[in-house]
Amino acid sequence: MIAQVKKNNGLIDIAWGASFVVTAVSSMLLSGSIHVLKVILLIVIILWGMRLTIYLFKRNWKKEEDFRYQDMRKKWKTNIMLKAFFKVFVTQSIFSYIISLPIILMNLYSNKINTWYHGLILGLGILVFLIGFIFEVLADRQLRNFKKDPKNKGKILKTGVWNLSRHPNYFGEATLWWGIGIISVSSLTSIPFFGLVSPLIMTVLLRFVTGVPLLEKRYIGNLDFEAYKKETPIFVPFLKKR
Image (cartoon, rainbow, N blue to C red; front, side, top):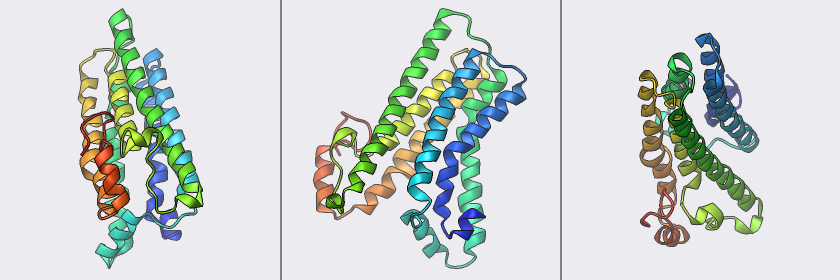
């Protein structure tokens, strides 16, 4: 309803991070028990989810609709509200649920951590999450500061983490979800392992479907970006540049 009043379906992005916080809290309460592993997972989800929500709210609330959603409107032409409801809002809620599987399954089916190797896996998950989270935060902050300077209008950011990857925010997002997946299976109970489909889906979506391809397509023909492509890996830092 808010998006339709403001004529901006892109506002759904603000709710993305917060939806996982709701899932984490509700699934933990529904599980009927609390232990250290659940608390740690809840903390990392709140840290990531609320940071992203606040960042996107500040960035998008007063901006015009993102070009991706504008393109959708142009293609739909008629019944825009109805199509937006199903193709944007319902679809994203389904993806939110699927991506939340590590959180849901861990909260409902995990055991307490009681051996050193459980703790080792948990530590690895936290480390992977922090690497991804730091990448995402730095990428967002550096891009925001870059865009604030009027002198940079029409230019491509090539410094900081943007010198390591053309899409460091998406790389960070995919990486932190692998961290969340590892944390969720650290008790080594069987059912939460099904949740590893979540970071796999997230990585595929960001790298090959909704994230990287759409932005790469937007800059086709931009000479500055073409030069940037020759110097910088597309997704994973330090990999072959293409």
